[in-house]
Image (cartoon, rainbow, N blue to C red; front, side, top):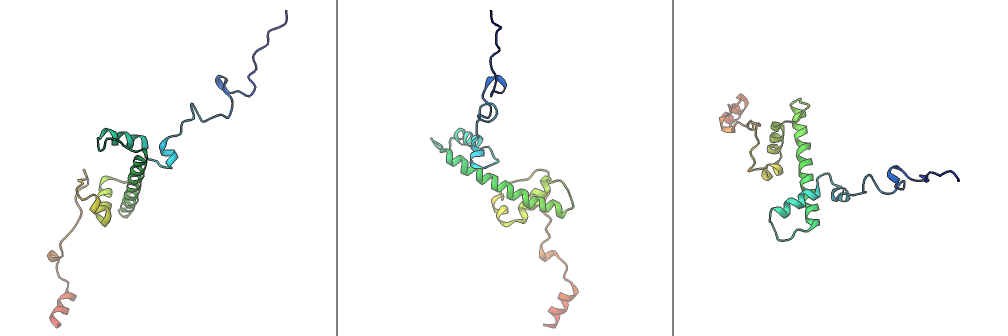
Amino acid sequence: MPAKRKPSTKGKGKRGTAKGKGKGKSGRITKASRAGLTFNVGRVQRQMKQGKYAQRVSPLAAVVLAATIEYMVAELLEVSGEAAKDLQKKQIKPRHIMLAARRDNELDTFLSDVTFPYAGNVPNIHESLMRKSKKAKKKSASS
């Protein structure tokens, strides 16, 4: 009786699958990666459906909304990073986000109804409460 031969595993990886076919477990590509986004498009679409904003929700609408939210967050983080750097801090805290939002006109109008927790308030002294300098007095007296 001839000796039994082992089945060939040539060209196959683990679990007997062919090498180089697909990515990872099942080769899934997310909607966010297709659109080139960081924000989760599937989650945005699910929340749009659950919110009952309309009877039907287009997948493209979820992609556009996720891209818009991602852009707004990136813009806010960029400006708040500059605010933290101005205060010589390495970490962005809620105060820096609030200061950045209130400093930028467009972000201020967009976030006008937002209350930032643990952020304090924007330092502001009205011009009428400021003391007039001596130079300003001399100019007004000579006129």
